[in-house]
Image (tube, rainbow, N blue to C red; front, side):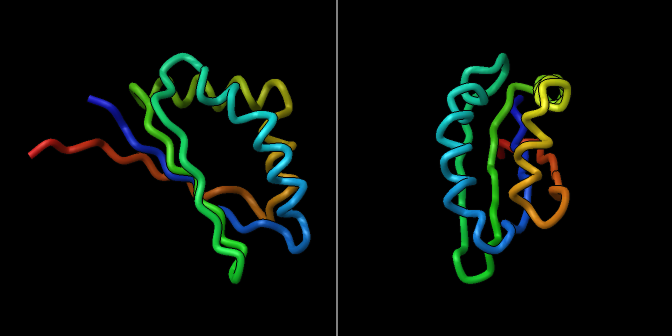
Length: 96
């Protein structure tokens, strides 16, 4: 069963254009990582709320990915565009 992961953040004032360029460069790496099934982005320009919605094969796959981007400085670079750390929530997909 797959999982959905959401990461909720707020973009620093004036940082959205630079964030967009960063994401365009890095999203292919996320989407190609072992266990990644999909990544969708949402942004509210009025509030600067930013949501990453990801689907992964398992929580372990996602946590392996987080460790990888932390070790390689990608997470620090992403957080440089944000007002604070993300709120990360894991959801088990229910099929009823």
